[in-house]
Length: 303
Length: 257
View (cartoon, rainbow over the protein chains, first blue to last red):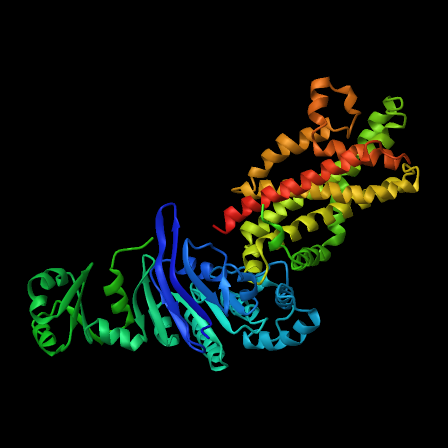
């Protein structure tokens, strides 16, 4: 049985459809990503899955329980890492874990023996008595992850787990998530970081305006949706050059500011041509998930 | 309103969370709750009381003591349900974290309600003790004031949660205190018997929850059985239940849309 199945989910706020018929199904043990720009409906979808937002229509089965009808029972078996830190600032690290375990009906005697192990997993060994206010952003996020594991959940929901963290902290979170997956946990995460999605997710859905625009393994998405090579051309003359010359050597050209993105199956003719334009700088690289994402969701800002 | 099916014993986990925070600062918190009412009690009780003959058949300070117990219970419950609950709901996002666990919004609110009432009861009891030490309590019947204090705490905690549900920021609470809580202190028999007021104002005061609390607590402290017990208790219970229903619906709309 799938840890989470979502069918034809819809949710509108004041006439604006935020989630517009979204559907996906997680396989046990995989890491599945919801990838989308700000406002794509990722957080609303997660809230619906937890029974914290009432969908207008659609079907959700979380950990074998229909949601929202039996959301409380479903949440017994789920761990959640929210987008914004909401650790209890009045408590120490250990107290945060104990108090959170009580919300699952766990006895203190059940939780206490797990504290050292959970803090150790979070890279916070010996921080039992640390005040939350003294922890760095990365430490807080790791403690939030440890808190989400207090009930030994089968499925973890993470809403933008590394937003706002520095590179070291992000890598540590990624490493821990991989370890959890190796232990057999299923993971659903939302993100707008392509490298995060590419690194962690076996499958992902690209979401825009509440709709799924593509779904699959990161590598397949790149292969199926976009040319294999990208030549980025920079410089003051780049937009003008792109308008006049680029089309002849590229399958597709996009201009953003002073950069032209030339998508090509074979880059050799384009690079040969560019050798005659010393004022333009170039970067030749394989296409990545970000290219797919930008192609499918557009380049305009989403705020 | 469909609240009961969503309530569970998990509410006590929320209550215990707040209790654990309070325990860390219990003594300063209790002293803080005592300071303000004691200033009024001694200042007005001795200062003003010295100028007055008996009020309602007792010394003014004894009269005022009973009112002070009720007013400070009201204040303690209101502060907790407004400022503290708002911090947990809006600023710290504590409720959001709790509701990611198998705890419903109604559990969270019931935990907050019971906690605010419990904290108000603690501060009410602390004042009762001081009054007892001062020799202003006439009989063991005064122990019955404790459940009345708890009930008063429930009523004002529930009312406070409505205001919290509607509050955009902390500033909003000033209106509630200025327009509702402070007038009640003056209209409901805390400082003087309500029959000193014009009849029209008395009629309004009779509908205010603090009136019912004072009408129960004052005779109990003097060793008398209050008249109209059932009506007063029912009024406080009704306020608590109806206000909690309204607060739950409002907060559900605010947080779970």
